[in-house]
Amino acid sequence: MAQKKPGKENKGHAPMQFAFQRENYIYMFIGLGLLVLGFLIMIGGGSDTTTKFSPSIFDFRRLTLAPILILAGYGVELYAIMKRPKEK
Image (cartoon, helix red, strand yellow):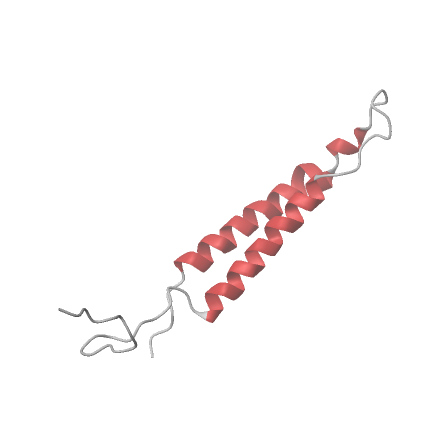
């Protein structure tokens, strides 16, 4: 007995749809950009030598701005995942 191969036939069923719409992906890329920017701001700089202390590791950019950007990025990602598509 020959089995039917799955094809484009979809009799009596709703059409297949992706889990996310275009708008969701746009928000996901924005959130990813915020995450990358936050982590890039957090790294780098500091002292030129290992024996000299540099107070620049405790500046506003690393202790305040970067974590805010990272949390905002995670918030945007969560929003992008939870956002429902518009009903037609």
